[in-house]
Amino acid sequence: METITKLDEAKTKLSKLGYLDIEIPEGIDLIEEINRLRKEKNAVILAHYYQTPEIQDLSDFLGDSLQLARAAMNTDADMIVFCGVHFMAEAAKILNPTKKVVLPDLLAGCSLADSCTGEGLRELRSKHPNAIVVSYINCDAGVKAESDIICTSSNAKHIIDSLPKDQEIIFAPDRNLGKYLNRVCNRDMILWDGACYVHEAFSLERIAKQLAENPNAKLIAHPESEEPILQAADFVGSTSRLLDYVATDESQEFIVATEEGIIHEMKKLAPNKKLIPALVQDESCNCSECFFMKRNTLEKIYLCMKYELPEIQIDEELRIKAEKSINKMMELSEKIK
Image (cartoon, rainbow, N blue to C red; front, side, top):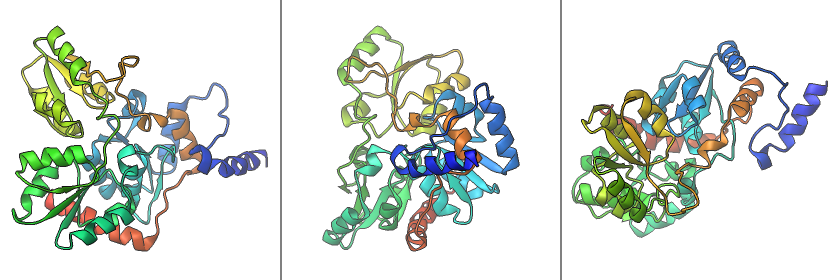
C-alpha cells in the first residue's frame, strides 16, 4: 500500500517534473536491475550518441536519428525505452502504435523542435501551395503530420537531390541545416527559422585558436552548426558520418564541433586518436553538452522501466498523418547506412 501511495503521488508530479520522483533503495545496483527489467519485460533500450557514456554502454542499440528510427521500426520488443529526447521517443511511438514507448524524462525536449509548430508550418505552406514540405526529424508529431517527407542529417542531401530541380521546397525547422543543403544541393529552399542551441553556441574565434594550437587537427562539424563553422570545417557530416570519418581518416587529431557525447563512441572506434571538443562562445564553459539529452539518468531509466512511466501517447489520427512522412523518408533512404 505504501508503494502504491508513493507511485500515485509521483504521478501527480509527473507533468511538472518530467520523471517519477520516487526514492530508490540505497545500495541498489542500477545496471543489474535495469538488465533484470529488460529481460522480464521484453524491453529494448535505444540510446542516442549524445547520451552519457554509462547510458550509451547499457543500450541495446546506439545510433543517430535515422538508425534509431530504423531500430524502433524493426524491434520485436514489447516495450521501447528511449534514451534520447521527446521527439525521438514520439517517432518510435508513431512507428509502433501497439508497443509501449517510455521516455525516462518527459522534459528531455529540444530547442529546435520547440521552434516549430504544426499550425505555423501549415500557415507557411498556405503561402506556397505548390511547395513540398521536407522537415528535419527534430520536430514534434504535429510538424511531421504537416510534412510530406521527413529527413535526418544522414539522408537529407539524398532526399533533397531526389526531388525535381524545379520543385519548390519548404524546409523546416533548422535554418542552419537548410542553408547547408541549399549550398550543397544547389537549391533555394524556403527555410523555417529554427536552430539547435548547442550547435549555434560554437565560437569560430575560439575554434581558430584551437586549430592554431593543434596544427595537425582537422575540424569536423555537424550541419546544424552555423555557416561560418561549416565553411571552416575540413569535413561536415551527420552524427554517424562524423563517427565513420574519425575512424577511417588518416588524421590523428580532430576538433569536434557537435554535442560532445559523441566523443565516447569516437574513442572506442579510434582509441589512439586525439579528440578535442570544439569550444563554445561562453568562455566560462568549455562544454558543448545538450542539457536536454543529459536529463536522462540511470535512476530515471530504472524507475521508468519498473513503473512503465512516463509513457508516450499520441492521438491516432495525428499518428497516422505523421507516419506517412516518416515512411516516405524510409522509402527514399533504403540504401543509406
